[in-house]
Length: 218
Image (cartoon, one colour):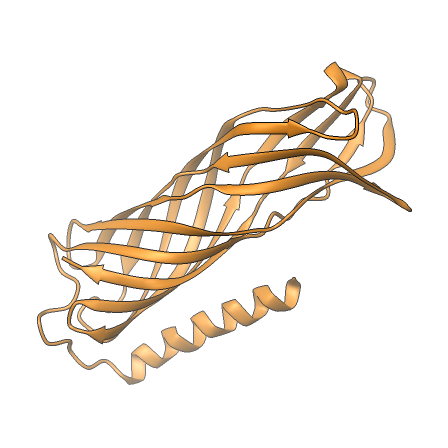
């Protein structure tokens, strides 16, 4: 998993550096104030879990949580207030399995869908170039729904707010279509109440969210 993160970061950095050396102007004006870009992406949601499971008295059970990855389609909608500054809303939903892990123990306890819309403010460094990198910061709200318990456990997950940072690049395929690479890091903690409070865990999900897709400028 770590190697996958490094590969994605390296690819984004290489494309960003390429924009400095290859800043041709896109016919049609490129990104500009008033532009709307709709991105259709394949997204990998990779939780960075591993939080301890404790008794109500704070005693560590020796078990930790593990949350599975999920590859899903997502939709990003960006509006440019100026040539450089845009707001992006990302919509999608992902499915995850939550397990209790420790030594030889690996027990599936819960399955859930998550709806985590992310609203970000972005700065685009070279909006009129055919390779246009950007960075952003944002906020999201995690909503857990359609949960199903497993192996005799009952699990309740708390919805809540998180924050995100991101970096990405748009590579022009023609004057209105882009190849998009985007990597977000979301910081989010939820509380898992297990078996009515017999066990608890403050779960630091903190997912990496790399995406690859096609953007259409209107």
